[in-house]
Length: 248
Image (cartoon, rainbow, N blue to C red; front, side, top):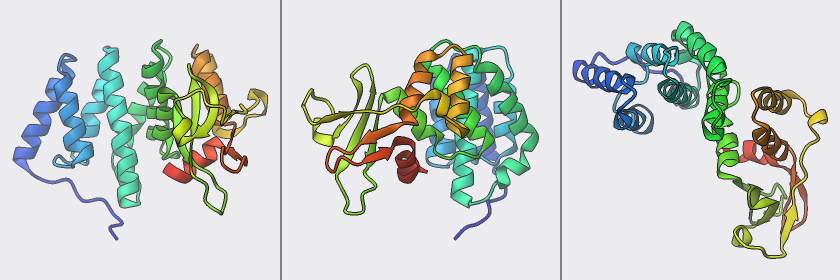
């Protein structure tokens, strides 16, 4: 098992490609450059996320005055750090670039107060958690809030079928997979957490969303940190607990 991240590659061609993509992304007018950076740094690793240009440039872009570019930089930087944590089972990349990570986190906390769009805001909060590095399932938590559903497993030891937890415009309920998109009677209402009873991460995220003017996100978080009912065995289960069990 690999337990340490590799040293940056001294690949002139790769450095040229990386520098070119970062320069194009910095213009704020080249969405393809951001797509290529995600593909080559995050998805297939043809470019080296540990290269000195990466986090340094992303931190520069995050501290720039252009909101969309900053948000893109923060989203990518957070994802790269969490991926490195998980892939190499070490926080070496964070430690190596600690000043850049601190700059990124500072920028993320400033920018999250600016974005009125719900999706942009959720990506910024996800980036904050990823940059802090203590929660490795933030992506799955916020993707469920944005997609308005989670696909989870019942913790019953006898092994129930998968269940869907729906929260949003279609309502707030759990259902068997086959019934997730219907009005079938085999649905069960969700049980949101009382905001006053929330603690830890749930309380922090709920309070941040309210303070930043995102009451709808705060409401969704009470359901994510609340309970659902398995439609097979009717057992109550922690939604966030099963998010962690499946994706954490």
